[in-house]
Length: 206
Image 1 (spheres, rainbow, N blue to C red):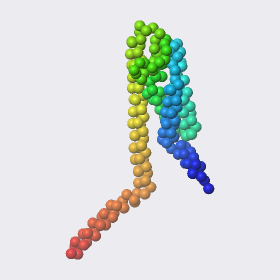
Image 2: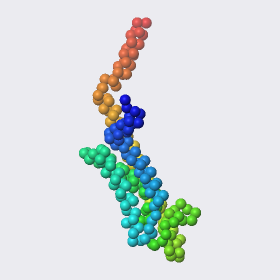
Image 3: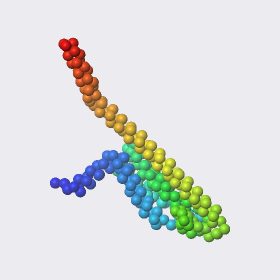
């Protein structure tokens, strides 16, 4: 007799393997947790030569790993499965952009120290040359806002695509049910006509 835990694991494996939407939602939650863990310990080198090279793996490695795992679960046969495999990649990119500090770090082209700006949420490279500090702080704010704007745009596009997908699958399922049992849709109409006929006969008899 299967235990509750075994049944739960078996059901989860089946859903992850058969339903790309479910597996993508699960991966999205996992990626969100991973991003938060990385964000807590992230420290930009604030070196104009190395900033972008340092940030690049943070964008690429987790996204690529999630993408490969999705393709291993669902396979690569068919363009729909390949597209679903790339969804975790896009989700990770959106999460990184929404965080903002990675984009700020990659675009900081001045030497400094990675700190939190006074009385703000912003993590930025505080320059060693204090004469340009105010100007560079403003640029860092702009980088952060642009990053979150790009992230919000990606999330909005994903949400629209998800709604379109759900509507499409719902209509396809309804159409398939009608094709499998065409008489089911006509039963209420037949009953209605029969009821009207009975009422007409009763009126005539009276």
